[in-house]
Image (cartoon, rainbow, N blue to C red):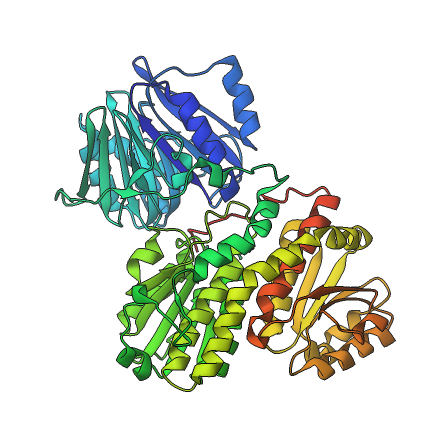
Length: 608
Ligand code: F6R
């Protein structure tokens, strides 16, 4: 979603802001702009479309100045046009504002300002906020921003500059991520660390209700009531190389290929081979707590929700604890039954997904224990849960989640293992599970070596209009995830189903033009899935099957098979998802799609 970057320091701001915006392109956006304090005014340059359009505009006239703000907008209120792009100015034209989030009472404030003669040039809630700050301005930007924020309801991350205070940048957050970058004699604000990583790795994460004032001499964090807030400075562990493509054609491909390492990092240091269990100190759960838990609820969105569904099978099968998986957007608005013996697990790559965050807050309010399995260090969900486990998958830049998904499954598996060993799983079973987990990185590497096979397969199916993905048991969520990967980056309509459900409707779609992808490893339901493959074959459908090495049966029914190494039944999703990620990737490339930034999608969904 929208990206914010701001700069105060000795250097020219425009190139720094543009580089920051480029680093945040992956989040998804449809217009961009910068505002620079330039002489005695504020110079705004903005454009609908990709950053290249803005770059072109800046070529004819690059605003000069050492304080500025930049924004990439993902349209919510108002179309993705140049007038709606940020920054927006107040009535005087001297105050510029960029904003992520939604000001819910903007229509009411707008009406009141219009009654006082304000004229608006855009359809955005952000311009309303800019005018409101301007209306409060009496020579002190910090006070004007604070006063305006008392009036607004909704979510925001904002950065504001004023021509009348050329050395000051004020930023604030409420429900939309924002951090301060602390450099050598220069200071930054950003919604995403990748925007400023080139300049500093020292960051201060703002919390909801906090404001920061940056000047050339430093920064100061306060809350809306003017109370000073002391904040720790955190060090970001990863460097620039980890957010660059490193020779791969796309971030998505790079991230798929990083999985042997990312998965190894997720489990590293957590597995207790002797005890056949896991050490998960960050969860802040004692053995007694684990034993007391009588219900697990996993809440998440999108791909993370699919990882949660796999988690459900693992929790119930190994730990014998009832587990439900719920879309965070549903959980937050219904009346969920949870109590102090319910463990609510929030799963999120970004740690900023608005619905997942709201679900965590709702669960906490009702007295449940909340833990987070989150990738982005310092993110809001990671800070709000009562305990957590970082996925350590490294930055995921491609919009379609790949390596984070498999790390989420592994993290869920470790929590389930720990719980299972305190309840129903034998030492030997625990050790076998650990052995299987430890073997996965090398097994994924083996699967990846055969990427060219998947590429050839993609060539044959790139022109399809629809696709069906079918799996059973723990591989049913893999079918959902495979279908989601294909549709989100190649725009081919794809559906995932439990294989047996096919007879209850989707079978009507099957004809000779319909590729049907089966996830069919040799597990407890193997014979059942072979029957389902026969049913598709009998109707002329084109079967692609993911099977276990050594399988000789499915080959005679399928148009194409791709083998994966044998593993523990409950861990097959991790291996089976890799060829499906590659398949979606290669199909999308064949179709000329923008793989890393698919249309309409955002990497981090910070609005509901
Ligand atoms: C799909 C995808 C999304 C995310 C979803 C949740 O490839 O990436 O479906 O999984 O938006 O995001 P996080 O995990 O950041 O909460």
